[in-house]
Image 1: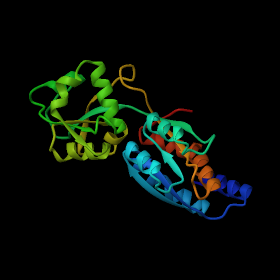
Image 2: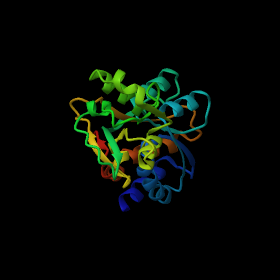
Image 3: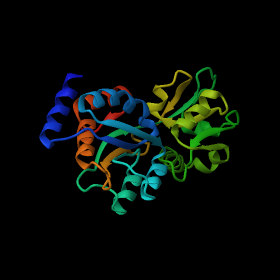
Length: 248
């Protein structure tokens, strides 16, 4: 990616930068896109990226408890708000970059037909994988959506809570549950599930992915360079290819 190389060389020259090792705390749903972007960025910039992927709520808690890091890329605004209120973000670096949507997935060979979220209440669906609905963003979004439709109380007894969105995806892939709720982007990377129902944007929760540099970064300039790259055209194209909506 010639554009990436030119961007990084120019950025590093502008700040007299040296090679840095950056720790990026990122939502599990960003795993594939960020792993694809990392090698080109590292080659062009000379910096090394270390990723800590997980549920955004878990990552935010780790950061508040003192886990070292340079950048936080969250799957919801609430977790970023928590860190901002705690004074953990570098001022002026926060930006909402991406959007996503909720889908209901079933195993690829499942004969189930799901035409609406209400179908999750059907007796043939005995278990539904949902990331922890009281803390993990995709689970919180799911509970919010089903509650809005008056369905949560009917479906919650079937819910099998998981650690994060990738764990929910794995549960459906394995056939251990009949269905699960994940982000559209996670469903697109798996050949072992199929999207049975996509929540319409007009009905579903607004899912935003903010990112920011952390105040205690050991190399603030390098953290800001990475943010600039992630918000650049080449990175945005990769995010879009993985199914994210790019906000600007």
